Length: 225
Length: 328
Image 1: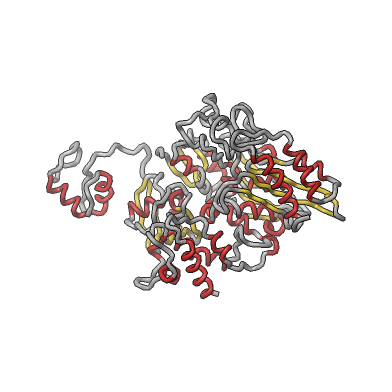
Image 2: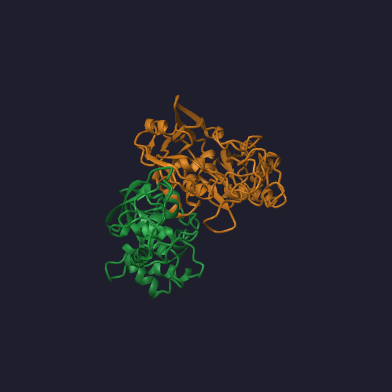
């Protein structure tokens, strides 16, 4: 196993299966290459051509923990979270900013992580759905989604939750929406159902759990007032 | 997505210098550029992230206008107290665009530069004079529901998708730009282009130039100005037709009006004929309708978008009524 440097592609089955087993994945070259990072003394299984652009160090501060990754600039925040940090709570729905399943909170604002390069958010605090609960204690919004039937398949749910908790912060900060009447008078926002729907309209749900989602947000916002 | 190098600019001069590298582009919120790169429609070799430049302020100007930095996020621009109060149609326009997540990411400069959402522009396998000059326009004889009825050419009937820009056009905004040869300003009317026979060029920004921000001149009657957006969905969809308008009425007569249309042209469309008609006339629905007729006279529709002509007329009337506080 020691004279691998410079060898084109020779690996015995034992090493291959050890690598695959340790990562717990079916052996695709890409997964092994990524998984190899996490193994002590890992080796490249498949020879990669050198990238045209050198990878860069990006520090992602996710849910209070900072980690520095070596990434190509074109890695999206979504892919960095899911593929490189094993944080698969955030989902890839459309990968084009049209569904909101990838919604996370960066520097206090909800964003679509699929259209964000990981490099852009270097050093900024990031909250994902994994960061909402405190250990085993669910976030009140998570509790409300359960109580009010706010999901079926659950795929859009992490994005819905990150948006929903953001809605409450945005209302507190006095942010208007397209549903807000009399924009020019800057009165405090009344979180009606119309307001909730408009503020949550960046998160779509193919199962159609919208009514439950609105109820959940309404309940938590009522409690917050 | 192609490979590219990424640098983050810390000052304007450094950003402009970095943008001089071959194939370099500025990166703002990325909501359009990263999307286009994922579709393999844009292939910058280098991205210069300008979002952390000190261009994120909104400041009052001595003459009562407003100076908006290019890095101000759409959400922040829409919610700024002066924008809400004195340029209400601008706040409303931004809030009716995209989604909250996208508005949090998008920058003022980026919103100006976003590209058309024409289906054929987005389809790399379709002929498109904007993507590949001379290859033809697939929309003219294709599915052209979302396409232009004013200012188009035989080379391109694409529309500009921004809501913010329609309101800025109505408010006579001025774009502040810096390039290798110094600073300049461009009136909003001259920033975006009509397609003519060069649809591949969207704006009059020169290569490497950086948008510093947008100035909004003072306007006495912007409070309560209106943005009406007509679209297939109640939210999270582009305009079929939109109208930004402000109207100064005294004694039941229109002293002055600002009207701009979205969804109808390659650039935000200032309704100059309608504005001229309204001056000094009674502020009522009949006058508004005649003004709209005057504006839409040269309109030309295609197989799937002829409805926009009548829709635009009614939208102008409805928006003017709303800007006056209700049906007149």
